[in-house]
Length: 133
Image (cartoon, rainbow, N blue to C red; front, side):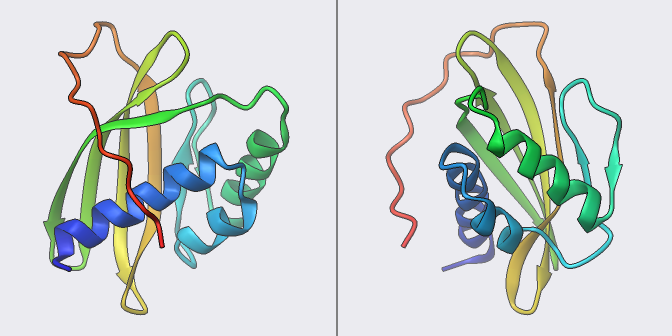
């Protein structure tokens, strides 16, 4: 598997953990240090403890949003990669940026930011279901 495919696979794992409310998988995806997360409408969160605490709060809610990652595109810069995608929620779309770094030979998330879009995205292609095994 090439770097771009491996990064997209890591991105798929992030959204699978989000949708599945799988905190253990979420913890394993994030980098070991110097991580940042900006949830829509939140202050920026810095550091593993604060970021993972925020995900525990979000995933623990019964009303956690159902999110679907659409049209992900990865760009790899050596040991760092950026994925830009559209997060589809019930009646809204967010544009998300996920930054990964290669850590211990695996792609780990070090930054996630999602925010509302002012326009409906262009027609999004249907995404094939990905086996995360």
